[in-house]
Structures are given as structure tokens and as C-alpha cells.
Length: 195
Image (cartoon, rainbow, N blue to C red):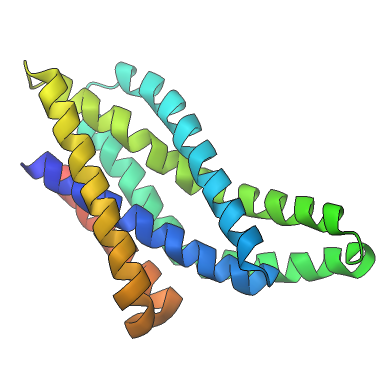
């Protein structure tokens, strides 16, 4: 139950990040379609890369919940740094816009590359959470299929709640920075629970 609760909160934080990142990048790039595409592409790539890398790494760890805590704490720290990164992204984008602003294809590539470089690390950390927490359950359970399905369900329900909360409540109440801090607090709480 504790591990399911941690994974639920992790999923909620992840989708809060996705909504906030999309809204912040829309302010940087000026077009929501490009911001959304960049965030979703990077989100999926990061989930795949993180799952692959941390899935291999966790097999060499004796205490997978410690690695899970590190991943969650890393996400929480990134959330606090993201507003400064978004500002740097905006200033860098302006530099590219001067010489290449008339070329739609170049600027589309610049938008994607900038968003990818900023978001690939945290999305890879997110991608690592499922194999790491699954490894923790493998050490403790004979009913692997049921446990993993329960974890994945808890994470997806958390993602649903996080998406709903960010889109309809958090951004309205606290804005992007406050929403990021709330999600960071969730990650740090999960890291503490995991330890």
C-alpha cells in the first residue's frame, strides 16, 4: 500500500509537470502546438530512455527503494530549477529568432531541440521510476503480475488526478511556479517515504 501510494503521488507530480511545462513553453515559443509537441515528444523519449537505463541500473542495486528516492528527489530539485531554465530558454530562443525568424523549419527545429535538451533529464528520471519500483516489489512479492499491474494502475490514476488538478485548480490558484513547487513537494515527500 505504501509503495502504491508513493507511485500514485509520483504519477500526479509527473502530469502536473507536463501541464506546467507545456504552458511555460507556450509562453517561450508563442505557439501552443509547438510547445505541446515538444513536451510530449520529450516526455515519451525520456520515459523510454529512463526505463531502459534505470531498468538495467537497478539490477545492480541492493536497495531499489533508495534509487527510487534518488529519482524522486532529482525530479523535485529540477522543478525548483525549471523557472530559471525557462527564462534562459526564452533568452536563447530570442537569439536564434533574430537570424532565423523567417525560416519556419529552422525555428521549428530550434524549438524542439531546446525543449528536448531542457526536459530530457527529468523525463528520463520519470521513466526510471517504474522499473525501479517494480524491482522493489519483485524482492518482496510472489504475485508479480498483480503487483506490477496495481502499481501501474496507481501511477496512471495519480497521473489522471495530477492532470485534472493542474489544469483546473493548481494553475488557477498558484500559477506555474506555485504548481511546480507543489509537484516538487510531492516528489520530495515520496523520496522521504521511500527512504
